[in-house]
Image 1 (cartoon, rainbow, N blue to C red):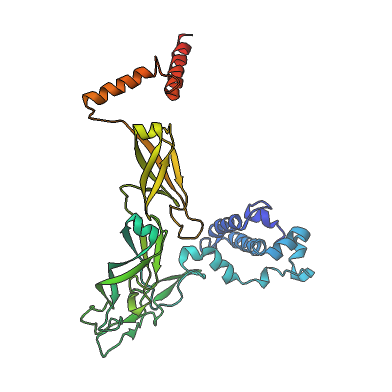
Image 2: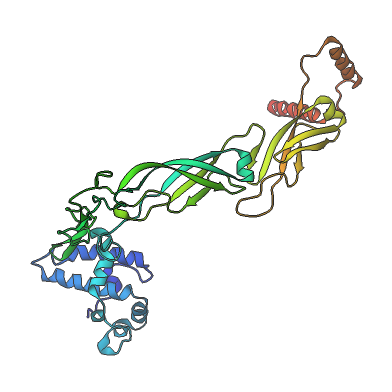
Length: 378
């Protein structure tokens, strides 16, 4: 067992996390690996030291014992409970660190076999009404489906695929490169693990054919743009008879001529006449459930919001129903005849000079403008 400090060997601090330790060990191991330094015994010793340090510092129990008692805490000859380097599995350590580079370790696919098909995405355009209330629609999806003639095997009816002689059905082969074992896709069967001597005439040995299928999609109430519905097993069929992927139907709600949606609330603009805005009145406004009466109070200004509770959207993931907010827009009368213009002028004269009491926003605006220009003169 090395007597050098393990943290010093790997060049990390005592509070280094596993990611830092692994990165440092990889660097040291690549630098001093015996295959890279065949004539340097010192390099081999440094490689063993780095591996010993890595074995201890990556094990939480060993690291705790080492931090408390030093080398005595991990030396089996001195009664250390955590065990020394000799108790570890070197192949496990090596695969853990270098597996992501060379395809070894636990991350690679061990044996060949049927693979899962690809997932598909379908964008469904729906109206706001259907999104709020829910609906059922039929869609046509082009996809790769299992060949019915050969049941997805790719082999002609009456025959069947045979095990690949190169990889023995594993789909991958291993190659020895010095100290390393490199795993790669079998060049003969291209990872399938099987070979087809007499391919199916319908799919030409692929096991899949292009097909457009019609599906019924149930859209729940309350969906919004970006929401997805998952249809399991409705994606592409897997190669070599593998399971099919999934189909994700993504919602896209069309723009509505009256309403705008913001989460669970709906918004709309309600034009009101000059007279109704000044004297008050009552209007019929639309909702997704039909028309309702909206009382307009006297002296209503453009921009005032009227809230109709419970006339919005019930969220698809649950929660209370939103509201409908109606924004008042006072409409200026157009195409006035001579008499109507005279009446408006008489009305304006009746307000007196300026009409400040009847136009508070206009008055405050002009006062702000005057103050702005006065400040510029200073």
